[in-house]
Length: 340
Ligand code: ZN
Image (cartoon, rainbow, N blue to C red; front, side, top):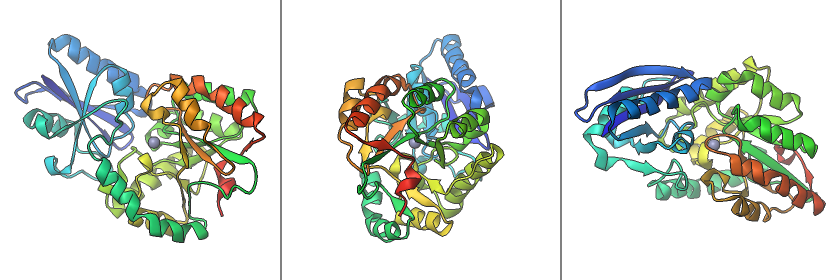
């Protein structure tokens, strides 16, 4: 087995690989946010050249590539802090370290699949952090600094699309929304914003709202205050370069802590969750996505994705979701309409 590490450093996604003995076979190589196909091509090249199986290792601060690597047929694992050295500022654990740690201690890794998502093996930790956040959520709701749904006093629904922009899927989503003249909110990942500023502009120019979904899509409970704020600030800076600004932030996976919610509120940001998860991130089939979307009611915030993996099913389901909810008399609004 050969091992590849995939991480991020500034605006680049970084890859490095070692052989079974831990000897470097691919030196650390950075790819700009828009060059993910080239990174996947490099990994496929390693597989072809080595005639060995290849496992990719990433850490919990890198959540923007795993779905795309899995969709490309690669084997992906996550390594967690006890196994890892510390992270440098503005970077994940270096890709070469991830590869070597994977090779040295494969039993300590968590295998990721499309249906388990990036938090495989950490579900209890995730649910515990959410449970601890309930009191702060109630306090912040009244101050307009937290929402998971609108009041429901009007027949309005907010559609949200996370993890983009993506050059393949985002334009397809925009075409469908334009066909039905429906506005939506896009929570964008900073590395992707920096990679595709023209796509983010296209989203905004079409009348949609753009929100902040952090820089590298990390699991926020693993990060300290400075790291969390850098994730949000770097994304805000990339949005400013594209001529945009936002006060809306959505934590990756909806993984919040009382502390992170408070830090965001202190910055004047409103944390936006959802009440209807279509589950499209797990690629469950178009029918399952439609079933979940059909549970929306007045004030619902619906979670979908225009990137982060193969979103063919999302694109397939979207016209039916819009037709069903429009035929029931609902109007679609951008999610800022629900802020208290
Ligand atoms: Zn996300």
